[in-house]
Image (cartoon, rainbow, N blue to C red; front, side, top):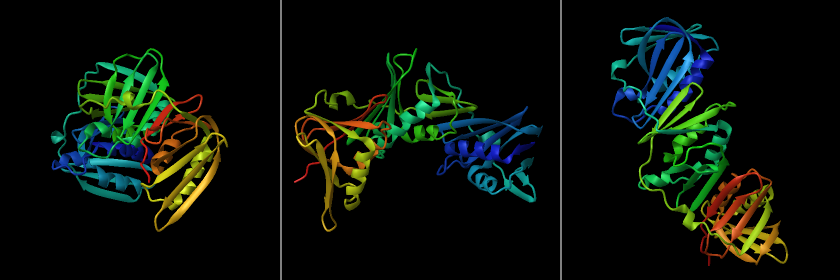
Amino acid sequence: MRFNINKSELLNALTIVSKGTASRSTIPVLSGVYIKAEGMGLVMETTDLERSIRYSVPALVEEEGTTVIPEKLLLDIVKNLPEAAVEFQTHDSTVTVSCGKSSFTLKTLDAADFPPFPNVDVSSSIEVPFAEFCSMVKRVAKVVSKDQSRAVLTGVLISTSDEGLRMVATDSYRLAVADIALEGVQENFEAIVSGVFLQEVAGLPKMEENITIGLTANQIVFTYQNMVLINRRIEGNFPNYRQIIPQTWATKTCFTTQELITAVKRVGLVSALSSPVKIDINAEAGNAIINAATQDVGSAEEVVGCEVAGESIQIALNHQYVLDGLMSVSTDQVFFETSSPMKPGIFRAGAGENFLYLVMPVRVS
């Protein structure tokens, strides 16, 4: 096998497929990137048996063939090469990588041992503008649980309705729900997908194109530009999140989003990571006192102007959770709905954005 490829295109391809390699597998070939040179370019694949990534990239192929090269070492080498054409040439169980005055000879792995790329039979699919897909993932994926003993909570529920696409995530302490309008989407399209994997997909180079999301019996398939990314769906029943979203409120407060973010950040400087921030809403004064305190450190408070509908109320919430939710709101205004100090607080984005963020309250003395 022998081919030449532009260094920047090779680096971009390796950066994308590197997300699919198995770093801790007992199967050595899974730590490598499978490269097939044919026709006018390369097909590069990686897999950890849970996820698989395929990327096609143009190259000058002089001699067709296949090989598997240790991914981490190859990526490190390519990052440090000069901006020039990179030549690959295989010899039995080695490959020579040459660029300018640099040359590396690396041991290769047997391509015959590399698992074949999954042959998926997609039962249903939808197309979503990639920019909107990324925006939804950014808002909800940060909420997924890191507790692997509850696998369902490490995933994001993706579903469709007559109105469009919805993504939901929860770690049982908070809940994020993002919706976008889509026309002509298939109903009964529903899957739980790894939040980490979704973030990796959303981290791909952004283009003004659609991403296609397809479902099989046990896998989810993302097709975008010249990439195919496949991951195993998470099995299980997602919590009935609708039943914990209050349908009424006693107090609805409208804040300027950035002003509230700044206030929570400032008072949070004196609180530990999991310490609560108290939000004391005064309906008569038309303001809210944001305060936090940590024993042996100190306390802080800030008064924030707001518009209040309903009664005065005080509620305590984990200040980092509050910030995570507010940082996901891109509208100038954010609405905060509360019904009692011991019931969830709900942040809703302003007009033009359909995003809900629920936080369970903290009991304070």
